[in-house]
Length: 96
Ligand SMILES: C=C(O[C@@H]1C=C(C(=O)O)C=C[C@H]1O)C(=O)O
Image (tube, rainbow, N blue to C red; front, side):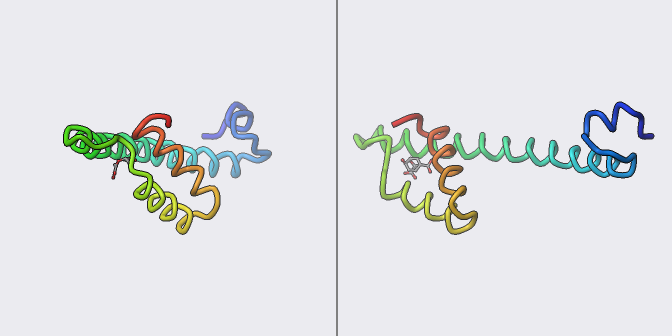
């Protein structure tokens, strides 16, 4: 049931809107948990690649591959996709 508190926390002006927002926010929280899990999985896989390359005498970072990753996100998501990919790369290989 919707209470005045639900209206406050959602910013809605009606009980119906507050119900929609509360339900949709639960879905967003669940999606964010999955996204965070996928990012952690990506970090682990990226670390395997970096460790293998470094153990073989190579460098941690491979810029030509990073350009491919940036283009992939930009093509899928537009300009903000590039910023997102840069953040993901930083999470996966640290700052350069
Ligand atoms: C994972 C790699 O190593 C580094 C990390 C990358 C990534 O997390 O996507 C991409 C390029 C490299 O700088 C790779 O070369 O594929």
